[in-house]
Image: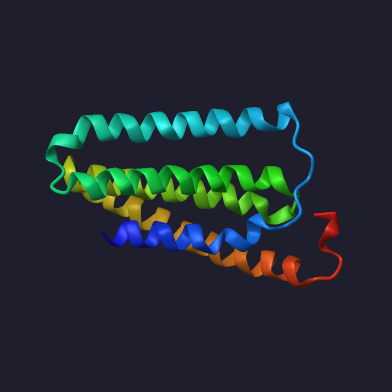
Length: 150
């Protein structure tokens, strides 16, 4: 339930960023994010199918996985809309959240190995640091008069 609330809150915080004026998107620009999204979707669906029977609340599990995929998709597709130099943090945010969710899921339902818990904590630290850095830098761009170049 807490992951559901956290994912919904993170999606809500990206709404102002989606209002930044988009640039023209070409087919070549879309190929890499589509490959990343396909990989993420495959990984999440594979884990869902593998552990679905052991999850106690299946409804929240499916909703949480959908929010995770939507958030990862948004993190990978926002850099297509604008060319802000800090957009590399979005890839780190999406990737670390995906790693964090997958490792925490495997730790909880499959292998309670301390190294997996350490990996989850490292991914959380990197994810939260990148979120803070990205929002500080994007807020400067949103409030700056000359941000049209992004």
